[in-house]
Amino acid sequence: MSKDPITQARVKELFDYRDDGNLIWRKDHKMNNHHTNHFKKGQTVGAVHSDGIVLKVSIDKKQYLVKRLIWLWHKGNPIPHMVLQSDDDKRNNRIENLYAGKARQAIKAKSKPVIINDPMDLFIYRPANVR
Image (tube, rainbow, N blue to C red; front, side):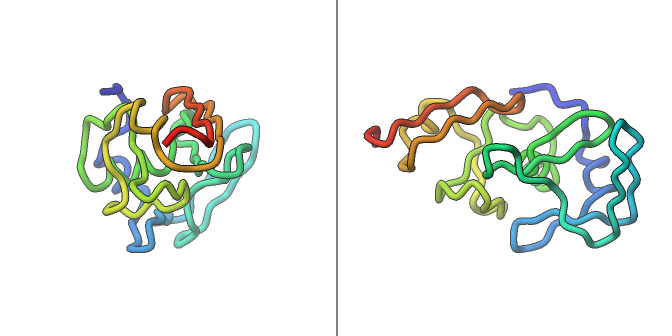
């Protein structure tokens, strides 16, 4: 299990969960960092990572995968080291689609080859011929 500094209370203070698997900002939010970002109440949380799949958001100067925050929003701490999507759709973050997994499960998942290099998950390479 990873040790995330963010709490369920903090996530629920910042976000609401929608049944479509998205988090939305509960109120206007301004980030004071090298980028000036403003988020409006009701706006969907997360930006698509450079791999075109993973949604991330920065909170209190730390980046999080949106799927991990959704897990935390529903289930509380601790967040499992690996949070996976059961249907292998990396954008489907509905809570009923998320499960605590292991690296071996992620490697055996059916999908096209993908490399995820993310500080919140292990490095994963899934060759297309591994089922």
